[in-house]
Image 1: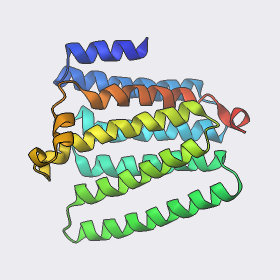
Image 2 (image 1 turned 135 degrees about the horizontal axis):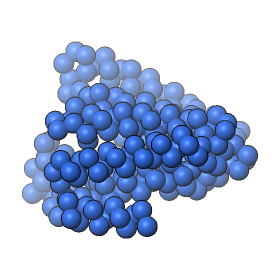
Image 3 (image 1 turned 90 degrees about the vertical axis):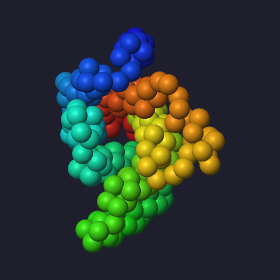
Amino acid sequence: MGLCLCILFLLIYPSGQLCRLFEYALVILCVGYAWACRSGDLDGLLAFLALLFTAGADLFLVALKEAQWIPGLALFCFVQLLWALRLLRMEEGRRRFVHGVTWASLCGIALIVVIIAARGGDAVLLLSTVYASLLLTTVFFSWLTPQNRLFTLGMSLFLCCDIFVAVNNAALYLDLDAYPLLKTLHDIRFNMMWLFYGPSQMLLALSSTFGDREEH
């Protein structure tokens, strides 16, 4: 029902201030649900905090009339850290070790990126690259550890959304006429980002009710 209402709204109001307010209201509702219905353990707390900081990131990227990419992307990188911590708690043995080493390496790369950006690099592009690496890592390991299927599906839809975010911003860096697939995706006359993003936040909020007991 929630998904149908989202699609209907996006068909009626595909863009504009009202659309942005609806999108941000959906994010806030997911945060409220996660707080009210979360499991009473660390897993539920991590899920709530991740959704709360997601709302913080979307304040800069969605709610404001002019998107503030650097603080928004920085917060989304932190969100991925919280989701990764939650996923690490679901994992065991060698998989947890490999995932932990992978994340530690990515965080080291992120530190290098921050230094490069501070010296005049394209901060948005660099942060986007780090964020994409963190998200891909979390989605990959979530499919290897599918104890909480709502979490796995939510993160996968999160990735689908960000693919379209990347496509929509590709024109800033590429000549899309030379990339027919990118141009086709870019020219879709529907808000594909929120078609995936809204359901992803709903699923992640619903996953906050599972708790450690159900996951192990």
